[in-house]
Each structure stands twice: as C-alpha cells, then as structure tokens.
Length: 105
Ligand SMILES: [Zn+2]
Image 1 (cartoon, rainbow, N blue to C red):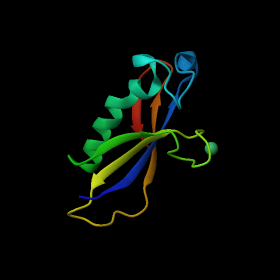
Image 2 (cartoon, helix red, strand yellow):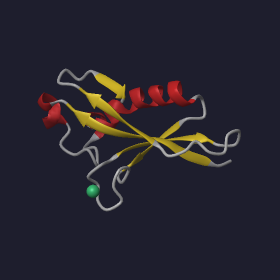
Image 3 (cartoon, protein in one colour):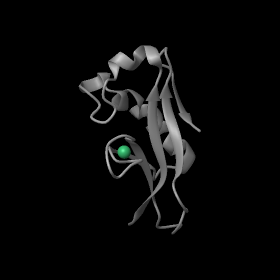
C-alpha cells in the first residue's frame, strides 16, 4: 500500500491564548500543546474530506524543509484505488481567542 500527502494543515492561534502555546514546533508539554489541542479537530476534518483511509502525521518541516518555521500536519491517504491526487492543498487549523477551533481554508 502506498500513501500520498493530499493536504498540509498549518496551525495558528488567537493572540490571547498565545502564552499557552509558546512553541508550535515542539508543542510544549502534554495536553497544553497547540498540536494536541487541535489534533482531534484536524483528524475529524481529514476524515470528512478524504474518507476513512485518511491519516494525520505531525511534521515539524511541513511547510519548510529548511527550519521548523511552518510546522503542521500532513494528511495522507491510501492511493491503491486512485494513484494520483495532484499537489497537496494547504489549509489552516486555527484556535481563536476563545479557543474555538476551525479547520479549512
Ligand atoms: Zn523555515
């Protein structure tokens, strides 16, 4: 089975909760990390958009191979039934100032 990255999901947050998420790349400690906070919503979005074979994988170098300035999730899918999906689309997972999460463009 081969898999292909079909979406890159970058992360951002509102200003007032910035202090809770000092480090997007490493995610800080435990459940207080931004990536853990957003994970379930990103997984649900990926499944809705891409079906049951969708998996999400954190990648510190998701948007930049040179440095961890653009961490995010790669959404991959099983390509057995469809060999080519084209270039990955790019979307955002955002937590607003109240901690409400939205995923998508
Ligand atoms: Zn960079």
